[in-house]
Length: 138
Image (cartoon, rainbow, N blue to C red):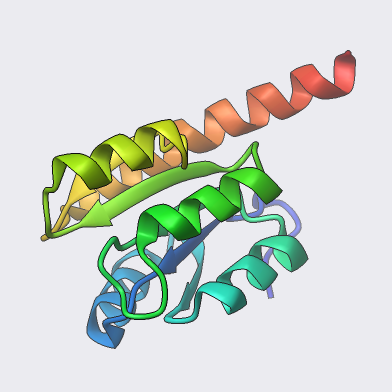
């Protein structure tokens, strides 16, 4: 149970088809963030909807759905989320799709660095909150 004096942890979701990547990500970040992990893109979309998760990470090459396709669906349904492609592969076509269709805000490579991930989450969450507050004022 969280202490009422402590702020709520930032919610983060990571979609990847490799279980070991998911568990490593969660193990490293779970003390600072509320980390949701899944291998299923449909479950990921449901988790975002049910939990208002502002920061979304996705691998690119997955058997059910490419990361760019998943992040495009996230953008269409939840445009305010901050979408990050986290991949071990660099393909210019994938990158163009990620930018133009999924509107990613970051492209990070594997193996990932915990400090870079933490900094990215914190910066993007600040932006998410700022933009959310602007919308409520309008």
